[in-house]
Image (spheres, rainbow, N blue to C red):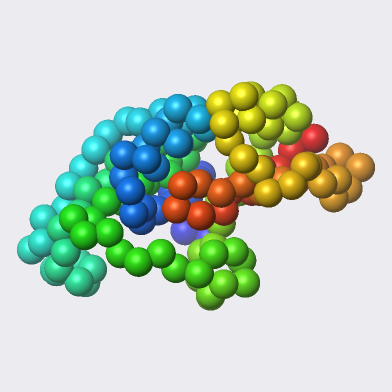
Length: 141
């Protein structure tokens, strides 16, 4: 295992409508915007990322960051759901009280794909989608 500086993995999420995504993660899910960084076209090209400039808004959630990535021209949306394509397909958040989190988020207008499903005696799960259709899994008691 690599010697990590932080024991978590941050996830970059390319969004089509940056303002809508920012409002969703900040206002509905309660993530905290921290820093915002830009990458110019030259640096993007040197890094092997295709040469398009983009902006990253860090959204802190626990010890991790969800990085909302905005390109000048929004890329097309990919196929939704875990079976839509190979690659990273959803983010999982472990919460201390699933019912409480669901109730708080429903009050803010978050729509879930189902009611929580009991997976084991100690664990429930439920999925929701962000404004771009990206899946978020909640797990907890």
